[in-house]
Image (cartoon, rainbow, N blue to C red):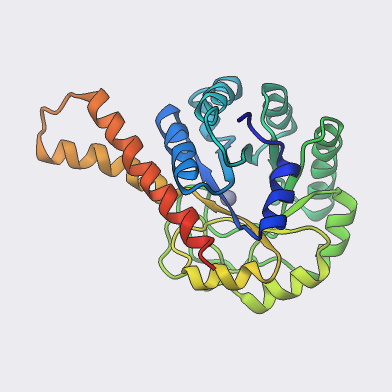
Length: 278
Ligand SMILES: [Zn+2]
């Protein structure tokens, strides 16, 4: 199967009542592992990569790897840009064959956030690609955990934001935290309120550590996509770390890389199955 267009993936999820996991990749091994996890579970989802992680490769290379990784898939898989940091990154990913895009201008003042999102939406919609935008900066930097400041999405801004940006998915901040956070307090009443107002489906970042019961509840209130980064990264790093702990002279990169693909794909399969159990 080819990489699936993001709009088609969302339609598929709605039709069959799935929540779509979006698994963060960094490199070749993780990309193959994510595709394999989804294929073995026979459930749909996203392979995604953040602007930050693209520093290691580039959108064209990740796109080619992803296309190869899904070629035997019988379940729909899209390739998504996570936390697109600039219009240039958005454009580079669309041009490279990504099938879904996030623009993250949530750190900017509201009006500038709207303007940046609108610009990305106009470009992506021309090519028939959906755009995720974020309102209410999420706690934690993309890859570290910060548990402080309250910065939840203000429901009163949702309708205006969605309408003016033209976004197709809305990432919300309802107590979810980037990084591995055990038992984050997801504000279901707030999510419910946002869902009542929002004309587009909702996205939760920072899925690692959120109990399945909370995800099932969120699914009843507009959740269509949930991001998992830390859970898979941990599996990847653990594979190499344990080998090094066991033998400081370990040098069998290929064997460990194959093992890391096994471990990451097992985790991806477990997560996609778990969130769709109910
Ligand atoms: Zn995120």
